[in-house]
Amino acid sequence: MKKLTILIAALAGFSLNAALAQELPPPPAEPKDFTLPPMETMSFDNGLKVTFVPFGAVPKVTIAAVVKTGNLDEGDQTWLADLTGEMMKQGTAKAGGAELALWAAEIGGDFTVTVGADQTVISIDALSEFSASATHLIGQVLMHPTLPESEFDRIKSDFLRDLSVTLSQPQPLANLAFSEMIYGDHPYGHPYPAPDLLQSYSLQNVRDFYNANFGAARTHLFVIGRFESGRIMRAIEEAYLDWPAGPQGLKNPPAPKAQMRVKLIDRPGAPQSTLYLGLPVPAVSAEGRPALELTHTLLGGAFSSRITSNIREDKGYTYSPRATLNDYVGASHWVEIADVTTEATGPALTEIFAEIDRLQATAPDAAEITGFKNYMAGIFVLRSASRGGLLDQLATLDRHGRPLADMENYVGAIKAVTPAAVSEAANSYLRDQDMTLVVVGDLTEITDQLKALPQLQELEFEVADSAD
Image (cartoon, rainbow, N blue to C red; front, top):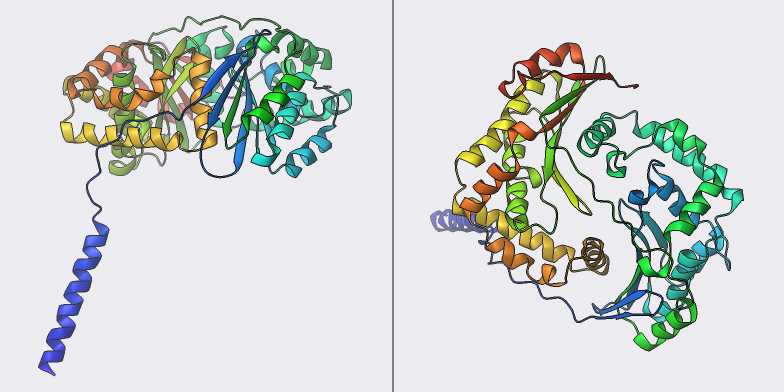
């Protein structure tokens, strides 16, 4: 009996040690350098570019037309590019909207039209055996949309409904105010239109936008996955090479404003305040970007970042704070975003400023930096490990006119950033005196909290109603 007891105790101890061993992961490996798969790019007389990327083992292919047009080209007609992109899905010279969806389903996927600030991407994921058919489908949507009158009122009504819902939420209201304060009258400064403006758009506006902004010279076709290049080349020759060059891409870099300003948007009775705090930072091509990106990730760009750990884990002011680096062509900005309890509005901002100031004053230790470097390298490689992720990376390089070497050198560039360089980046780029702050909340509860902050005491606050 005594031996049995000893055996059970030994087994229990072994099980506990085994469980503890399972709970403790091994130390992370040194991030590996990234290597691009082989690819071939060719250009045609009409200006069209095509890049072939053999990739993966699954018999599928992603085909995407990346067009250098988007919200940048709208001028003051905000969301006209988005409306045009949605109308392009409603039918072509060869197939109506329902027929396009059926066509895509029959070849193993569906197609999407995604409109961004500087690019419109028309893409499809399909079985490799149908790669030629997928190439023709993308060509139809890209070059021969009918933009049918029968669908226009329905699509515009959908947009108006979505806009109404969006502008009833505090984060879009804060984003709209923040963007206007940073970018002014530039298209980047107007992420959402006024309802009356959206209501005023006609089908002719859509057709004019398409004719003015789509053409071969602005288009880069990507073919990524398993495919027979000869079959796709024949499809390209049949469908794309007679497309006119059209206009060259628009160059209209903004002049973002870096200046401490505060705008308050009143939501009486709101239990939370929405914070947007940020400023312009160096664009994608800047020499100091690796240090800036690591600084951003350490401060607020990851779940374990300093600001998140402080105001979420330690203080309990908010559930999901985050920082973002928003990159446009020729401009970028950094912003910390958080929904905090009303009574914690001032204290949360105090902690955010304090974390920035702490990083400016003291370089982080090597162990902390190494953890974030490994995280960033891992995320980068993971994002490049699928057809869609690789497309996003290549389209981003194309959008900013950057070489492929940026991808191949990314992991090494992040690994080379020193703790001192992170502190220097915080000092150079995240300056308290140049921050723009937008707060959406109950002004009767939060105004005095904000006036008590040392960074804001010399400022006059701009005040607006949430319905303005």
